[in-house]
Image 1 (cartoon, rainbow, N blue to C red):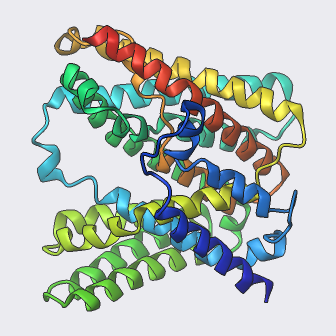
Image 2 (tube, rainbow, N blue to C red; image 1 turned 180 degrees about the vertical axis):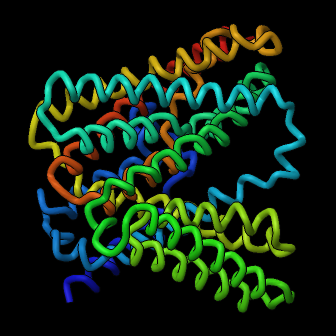
Length: 394
């Protein structure tokens, strides 16, 4: 009974918050930094979790895992729909190279930084260090577009070239982080219960290709709007369920399905409209699920969160600096380009929730809490650094 009660509460919060959040009310800057990014739903999840009201306790969270898997699958499919090859070709090749360079440099900087800290101050097993380092690097390498979307039209008009490049990079660099993050599931304990990792990869690839073929067959005939909605929901449920059975990432498998559908299906525009229609409620649900397991019982969490935020800032700065100095076509952009890529968007949080679902435990809870603390810190510095960058780029 408590599971149904918890389910009703979080769905009510998500869909009621959708009508109130992301709107430009006259609020102080401090409040707007939270309100316009939906960050208050992290604190709502914390309030509902075991540390306060305990409405969403551990047993309830376990019962809601199918919902969180579906949520991850929906986000993964939506992210995959952003990579339509025909549309990506319209942008200069230099933009694609810049996005990959920035993503790799940021990923590498955070990866070796986290691994070095864990090796120096922790006696964890080697495979746990690798899993944590790769996951936190993937989370940090991904960039959101919330800060860019909140810019005023006058600000955008003053630096259109910089805004265009930042928007492109922030939508592409997750393409590096997500597949690399999927490799951490090779270290998942449940991964080896039925097959070897080679066998699991074969099963995962075969299942993904089979599902893609099945979906394309479903979509060969033009369907009515209600029928198409049922097909899309069924796709997300079936693919996410298959990933859960295989103890793999629902986020990554659905990303692969979305990428294939957007490049092979003639119904891609209608499917995208269905997926995007619930993007904001899905994002708010994501924040609630993460907030439930957020731990603030130690000052070390706050300190490590600030350290992770600083490490990511340096990685983004070095990535942006390399773009503008190593690529002759990008020399006219300001060297502080990375300051416009500090926003941690929905994909970063989805990777974090996927990691939390796939690797439950005390260490995972601490790692998630550190990153969520960094998200709060990042909300304060993101707009300041972005404003500074745009003034330099005018």
